Length: 252
Image (cartoon, rainbow, N blue to C red; front, side, top):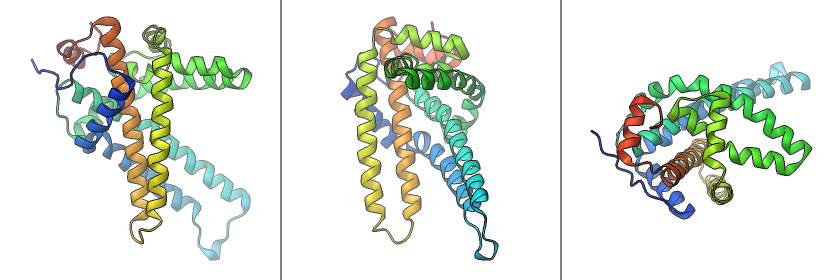
């Protein structure tokens, strides 16, 4: 039996943020590099599609089409990497020491479940936000854990949303607190990075990609740690049980 290296106990929001930062700092190849690679490729594609030689000046309509296609490719690339980072974070918490190729290959089965669930969540949350702010916000919070459920419990669609709702129903304030503080930290970090790279004559864009990847890796790691924390509180989840779930893909 592989013992979990992560201490399974109830944690405060501050402790979750601190632990997520520590995991990203100790394991950047697992939690940051996948996003940096895919996001960097998407950014390169964006540049190739938008930049045009002076001798072939595109029309405004063409420019808008190029940008729409490039942003769609970038958004898709980001969605692909979220299951990778969450899979890697779960493996680390379960006592594994995965390499980047193991994270990529291991997350592939969860991509379909994640996409399907995302397609259910996005229109419902947007409709709630457009109609009335609070319903959309509430749906976003109770379904906040659904990505981690898709990856670690191998549920999808309405089953993943239902499982997320069950876990989140008594934890709304903690989820909201983590989201608010996490977003503030990300904005400060990426904003500071943007100011610093202005003074870097070479490699500035690469530094920005790295900063954005670190922010995304941190966010997804926080999500997984919050998912584990809530299950620890509500179900008494321990390290050995979670390590077994990594093999079976089902909660005990």
